[in-house]
Each structure stands twice: as structure tokens, then as C-alpha cells.
Length: 346
Image 1: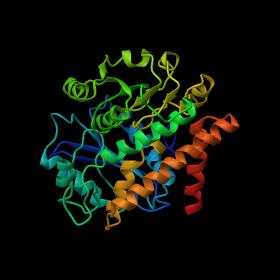
Image 2: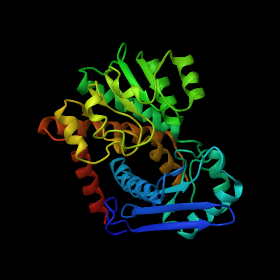
Image 3: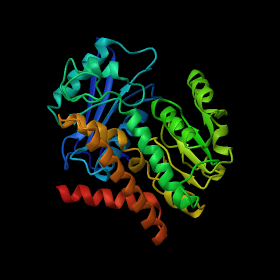
């Protein structure tokens, strides 16, 4: 564990197994310097345990940085459940996961992420109070994905101002990888702004639905890297900016909602050298955790959420401007600011 390349002095990495329900889960707490760790739960059919561990370590570190950049009183954590989200869900599994969250006694708050929906979190809530993203309850606000998507859209506009010379997206082409909860809502915002869309996903029904209402052109999952567009918007899984894809991008900017888009930090510098402006993922996609933070506070306010989201978009602009003016990769600038904010809270 301590030699793992994705381990970053995490405060705790907790493995849970419940034989009766089939639960296999990891909850990683990266930092509680700014407050209790918060981050969603992802259900995915991982290739092996190593892939599962790597994912949760990277995601939890990203949540520490994301919460710091959004200036939230929260630390960073993440949970992953090993299983097929279409076939392996059961009430017993989510109740077992709820007991796992409860055992951490408030050091970690969970919510929805890939493969998990509000109904699943309602079951988790039967076993623990440390849950957000619910439809019911005094401070409940439901699925945070629409807020995430709103922030991603505003971040795309902010990135376009610098990469394309204007935030007006009318007539611009945006290639969106992944049209799940966040990606689909992002497409709606982009279409409303007049952008031309090229989309891909492994879910054919989701693709057809988004295409029908936005006029988006559908391409295959591997073709999306080769399309000619102004902006590439990754809104599926991470590590999509790597040695194999780097030379294929034909865009001026990359800005999307997926977590951990860079397979390694050095990719940020390689993007800079190619003249592609990269919006650091944990800055642009922080809208959902802002919404979750409002729920965790026990006094949900949409006005507070909107104000925090507006400030986060300004922060993204500051990161892009510093990187451009000093000739530095954007992820390096964002990492430095996030680490400084976390260190200041210790």
C-alpha cells in the first residue's frame, strides 16, 4: 500500500467485504484537514482488485483537491463498489455498504457517482446518516449531476474565452465523450448555446435520446478522439488523456466533467506543448460537490450553491490565466493552489 504509485499519504484506506450480500468495497479517505471527507460512491465492474484500488486512491485525492478549489469545509474521500451496476445491485448490498460508511463515524460522507443513483443512496441512508444527494429529508436536493453539468458548461465557456478568443459557442463544435447523467445535461446546455455536438457512449439508448433532442452526431467510442472539433469534453471515465490518445486530439481545448482525465500529471505539460488548453477536471467539475456540501451543512440553499459555483468558475479562469501567462501546465497550477489550501487548514 505505502509503495503504491497512487498512494498520497492517505489518512485511511478501508476495505469492506460482506459475504451475504456480495459487497466488496473500498473507502479511501485522503484528507480531513478542511473537514470530513466527502465524495461519491462509484459502482464498476473492475478488471481486478489492483484497478479498483488505483481508482479509489486517485479519486479520493482528487476530491481533496476539488473541495479545496471550491473552498468548501470538506476533505477528500471516495468509495468504490466492485460489481456490475446493471446486474449486481440489491438492497442487502447497499445496506451493507451503509454499515461500512457508518463504521467510519462521520469521517466520510457519501453520495452518487458512476453507476449509483438516488434510489441506491436512499437504501444506504437506512444504515447511516452520512449520506447526501437524497430526494427526501430536510436538506435534501436530489441528484447533484445537473449542478455538476451546469458548472462544466460554464467552465467550457470560460475555457473557450481563452482557447478560442470568445465564450460564444454558437457554431462551435464540441465533442462530448459520455452522455450519462453529467454528460447528457452538459449536452443540453451546449445545444441551447448553439454549439454543434459530436457524441459517443457505450449506452446506445442514451446516445439516441441526446441526439434526438440536440441534433448531435453520433460516433463510435474510439472515433471520438479523431474528430475535428473546437473543444473535447470528456464526461465518462478517467485516464482518457494518455500516450495513445495524445496525438489524436484535433481540438483547441479539453474541458469536461470526468474525473482523473490525465493518465499521469506529465500529460498536462504535453497538452500545453501541443497548444491544447486543459481545464483541470477537479476544478471544472466541482458543481456537484458544492451541492452536496450544502446538503451536509443541514441548511440547503440554492442561492449559496449558485454563488459558490460562480466563484468556482472564476477560480478556473484564474488557473487558466496564470498557466497561460507563465507558460505552465494548467494542472500544475491547480495542484499547487489546492495543496496550499489544504496545508493552510492543517
